[in-house]
Image (tube, rainbow, N blue to C red; front, side, top):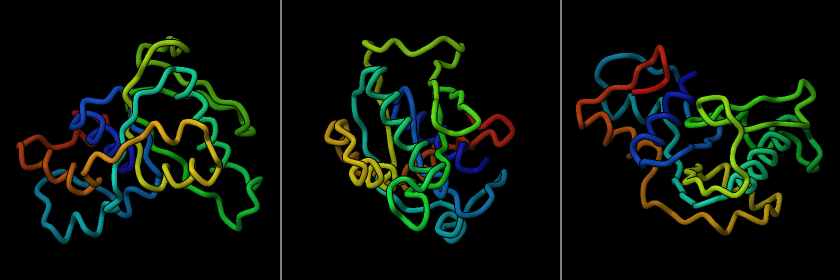
Length: 168
C-alpha cells in the first residue's frame, strides 16, 4: 500500500528500527517518477513525526492499542481512532477478531521484550495513544519533521521508493 511505502521511507530516512503510521498517511496512490509539490500535498498527509526508544514489550503494548483502536469501537467513539496502521521494519500477525497481535522482527523471530527499539510514529498515532492513556506515550519526542518533509527529503537525494516492495 502507499502508506506502507511512506512508512518504509520514514523508517529508512530516520534510521529507526520501526515506523508505525496511521493508514491515512497516504491520501492517494503513489507512483514511480518525479513528484511536484502539488503531488506531495495531495498524496501524503502532513503529519508531525515523533520518535521514541521502547522495549519490545512496550512496542507490543503500543501496537496492541493501535490495533484495538482500529478494529473496535470500544472507546466510545463514532469511528475508529486511527485507520489500520502502516508498519515498517517489523511484521505483525493478527488474530481474525483483531484482539490479539504479535510483532515480529523482519526475519520472523519475536521481539525481545527487554531489547530496545527506536520507533517513529505519526501525529495521529500519538494522539490515539494519548486518548487511550497508553503509559508509553510520553516516551515519544518530536522529530521536527513531517511525513511530507521526510518523503520530500528522500526524493531530493535521488532515491525513489520501490513501489513493488515498499522499500528502498
